[in-house]
Image (cartoon, rainbow, N blue to C red; front, top):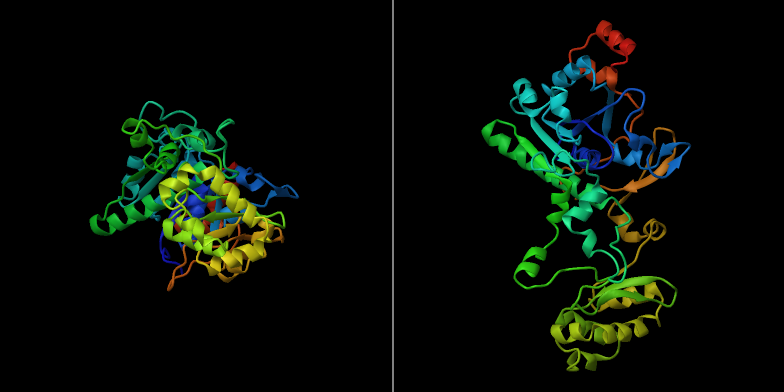
Length: 395
């Protein structure tokens, strides 16, 4: 029984941003009713790396959800959704702005059915403004929000992270917004709209970028694996071919690093004794540290630095994470069986709750697996109407 047990969410939309928000809410115990198009379903069912045509991501991003097929483009399907909204707390959608209104599923229409409904919109550019109606995937939002310009090598084109960063950030803000709106509803009794723009979710992470430019005259740009003026804090090689990140830029931590290196005099050397001096001498200091780290195997190096209280971590891959004792001890690798019988590992629940922990009770369901049960229980559909809906292809 997670902390959101008793909260019912109607998830509309597809791909990543909205469904990942739904996954997180489901991790915390909310009941997620995922509406999918009949016959085809969410494209995520076949997205990314697949086995036998089925996505290895789908079992995780749809975990703990109930799959209900409804044709949202049909009048009858739209009525079914409104009937379901009457018995839900949250509607989570990530269609292009204006789509829900065309279907008669705009906030005012849903509010008329359920005054307490919280409607969470996730879109590329938000529900208002001159760009609201434009298509906007996460990759585009990362560019517009500013993070692409600051990512990568200074002598190369802007890079992207190897994950759907913009979509995931938007999902996190969608969850935060959902929880805040539900908390306010406890006081007012009324729902509201939560408007999450993916580019704004990215922009929210950009620290003092605007002030740095407007006041300080500095445009933050790509700096590779370091932050300018922060040293030593970089990726360093090891004798066994692995790489580690060492973050020893604070004065006290740098002192502990020099002790681990067996060269404590570096901590009082005027070239490296202060944060500003180390920043100015970044290149030569990184060369010095790298020459030392290359004399140790990665495991030995990490253990040595941890003993000295120096922040250090492996550059992990899937292969190393699967054998990492700390990930295992924190239940961050959960082995579950997909609907097709494949046993696979997936990311654990974040954060951890001491009294009402989240749990993964089921992986992504087969398309429409819960259609009849949900419509019967929550939309007052009887057996005869259910048969008609199936015959007409509405569900």
